[in-house]
Image 1 (cartoon, rainbow, N blue to C red):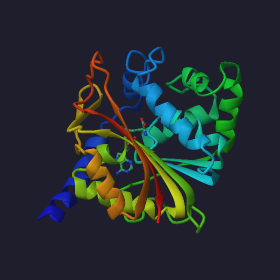
Image 2: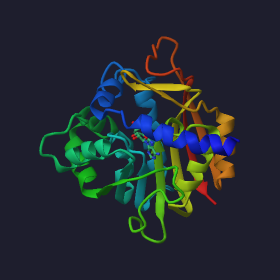
Image 3: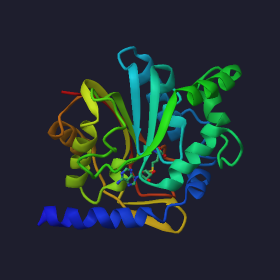
Image 4: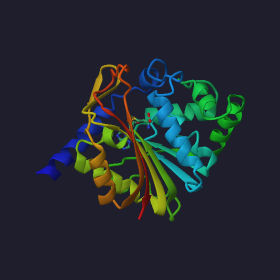
Length: 268
Ligand SMILES: C[S@@+](CC[C@H](N)C(=O)[O-])C[C@H]1O[C@@H](n2cnc3c(N)ncnc32)[C@H](O)[C@@H]1O
């Protein structure tokens, strides 16, 4: 019964995601007041801090970093682009891939100014070099489906797989239930070499997601214990889990989450 429900749920989720507008998403989630760089306890500062620490600790580096479900955003690879020679961006929706291509080509037509993010992750005076590095290492922007046993086209990755997978706010917002979330973790794990790292950021306790005004996406509310169990079941060893809880004076309008999680894990 559960399997059948999940099978029906995945196409339903795919259909709902087709209505997602990257421009509205960037405006809603990645500009002030949602993206508040003034506050050290804001969720944008938290997530950039987690990624910065993970990519500068020394053990997460190599040839190829793959970002799963990139959406139209680039903040997540701004620290990782220094630790890897190549970065592959992926998303389910062509509109998101198009938005990323527009930034990469740097010929206007990009909806988002990433300058405040670039300035936040490096010395403010070095942000143009950071942008140049990012444009240099992003090797491609390709389609992905985390619910497919083979999430990427066959010839996209080297046979050894990626050295590191990164995924932010994708699996729990693209999965109809916990079983599909766990299977998606296993599916993307096939893209990672044994011993490679998984860096996962997600939302805790979120039953719906309103990242774009007028589009309410039903999501799977996961807790820390469920994330840990899904990782174990999918062949990862947890190294670290960090939790962010919303400051009391935050007004969270886009979902009903209790907070966010950051995971650093290794593929067995
Ligand atoms: C909440 S957005 C997160 C985007 C970005 N990573 C970020 O941090 O803002 C979730 C992303 O998952 C993507 N997505 C939805 N269904 C997917 C699927 N089946 N496989 C891969 N990505 C999917 C969406 O297109 C969207 O870009």
